[in-house]
Image (cartoon, rainbow, N blue to C red; front, side, top):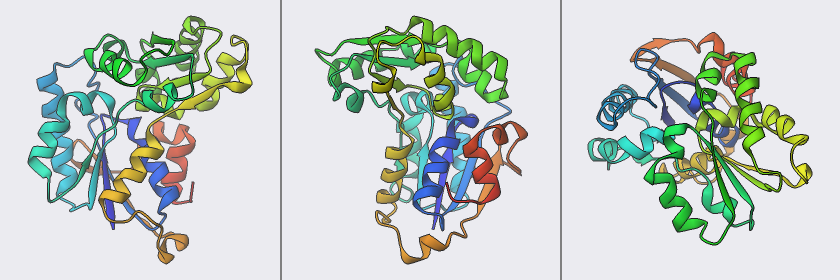
Length: 264
């Protein structure tokens, strides 16, 4: 059984690691776009073009499902990818976890890229799922790019800047970019001295829910007896080329575990 994931770069690592944890026997295809990144500053048409190229490269390997592990691509390209690949290959998009975060009662902060923060898409999610909840939208310029480069100094600077803008009564933090899900510990550390009740803080990412949905769509909602034995393979496509995980991916726990074949 094979599951594919697409993103411009490192943003797919969290969902891929969640899949490996749920089904160590699954074969994973990671299709990224180093030649075309970053996608964030591109026009919607350009994002769609690049995301479709990644999806087509992954589809050549006949996955049972494909995850669009990128918020930007899910906003702009999900319909086009589904129109081309479904029903043969179920396609699962990624939505910021605003609904479950709002369900805690808040206050909620949403960390996202500047483009997503200013988008009608995010405003619509807040309107639909967080009406009446105290929500603060926090743009995080440069953070996704710093994660992509595994630049520790730039990550620390961007996280500290976002933490400074996060209200001190925040109890639920939405990680509105898949890249940010690789930074749970640094984010908690940066917020630890700023929040009124840091112990109560809950981080809300999308990786686990997206992985579970992909398995359901592939007809594999429950682990099989084979899953406990592992053995799943990893295929990395970088702008369509078969390569190894880039060195920067190994800076993150998720990347190291995927690269080593160990269970998360």
